[in-house]
Image (cartoon, rainbow over all chains, first blue to last red):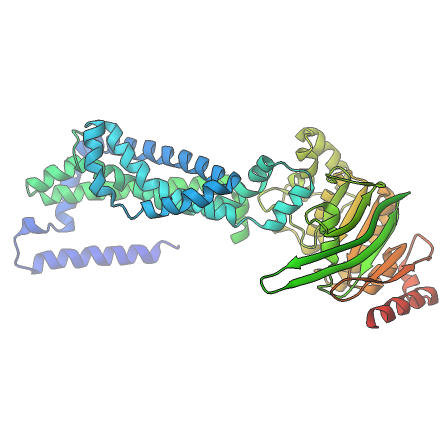
Length: 248
Length: 250
């Protein structure tokens, strides 16, 4: 069982946390014990799931949009080296702009609905995906590309048969990073202004010092991220059985 | 009829510091349905010869005639098998071998049907649905050769196809290649650094010098066909082998 050791350490950490809360003298509300969080969780769960829907929707839509745009850009950069040379460095540099500082603008531009959250998610997810696909496509064996060229393959056939499949393992590695970012991106979007979503729930809990509620929301955020991660892993196994066979 | 003809082909590679001459006036010819080997030490530009024939690399001077003409695009006449098997890891064996047919626009079902009939000949029956990573080295090489032959081109360029195999597997593959060649009758230009392999397989041998590559010897191999393993120790075989070895040494 490969999950045994992570589980042992997780339980150990929670016990330690519990102990610290009981031994310490600071007020209980400042840091709720895991057992306190667990106690409010069943009662909070319906409302958390209600909010979670919106967060998940923004995250998944944004994530998918990011994947589509990243794939299109990666293919275009592969076909037209000028784009690769001109755009790729800018994409990298754009990562130095802190999303959190421009996100309030999206609220002003796009209102309080779903759209600004989706935009934040797309911006956070786009980078890891585009980088992983581009690097994966570049890593395709040149000899393989040459061989197909000698077979008379067109540029598009070479992309379809060699470059994109060769990029899949790297692409899925990027997806796993982007997938976990996507929930976080949606929550950040909701923090800045929204009427629904886990981010809103968290800010409300925060402002009323109900920290055990805050932690129960954090729990749900983590849970959603883990589920998304597992979904990506599963899709990866379905899409590239050859990659996993090689590892076994 | 001459299928492939190289006339005084020269090629230099430009490096940062200086120019590196790779081929110096290579002239050779391969007749229709002939099996011709190029033998030479490693790094003598053998693969560059293939790259100029396929058009991946443009020669600096000299002419390359295929079917008696200089070709702008030779991909319709030539099928090339590189040193590495270069099977696509993400395609099953069956989809790997039909790749050239699929690229040419043949429907998958038609291509599969054609390939299935040949699986036995290539010793891949029962392995159609496996991924390349699940095959042995010899099987991968056979799959690569099957892909090369299924492309249905007149001319096969084989670049040290058995170089990575152990001696026993290699010998089996050589005998098997001769059978396959006998069955499919194509023009083959074959690169190797193994003199015995060259004598055993070919009708004619070109010996290449160290870089820059020049033709040092053109040797006809008039041994009867079909060839068998007894011939290897025969006096005619040994005589040719000695001559080729001597040309390599000097």
